[in-house]
Image (cartoon, rainbow, N blue to C red; front, side, top):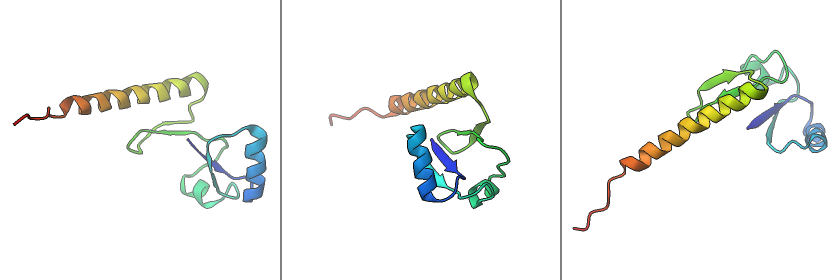
Amino acid sequence: MIGVNSDGLAENVAKIVKENGITWRQAIDGTTSGPIATAWDIRGWPTVFVLDEEGVIRSTNARGKMLDETVEALLKQLEKKKNRKSDEKPEASNE
């Protein structure tokens, strides 16, 4: 999880992060018209993007139960993919 914070300077963001118990990384965009918000065409805060392991946007603005379900589904897909890869490994030869 990465937060893109538009609350001004790093000092302001540090205070907000501490006061709100935010534990995830923060990119500091400075303002609502900062370079990250502009590049991603952000028009409202908070905006939520859920990306899969390949960086593909799988959901936008999911909240609450829908966000939980989206993340859980992606984690299950990732686990299945991981298990398939481990099943495909050739066994070691004793020759």
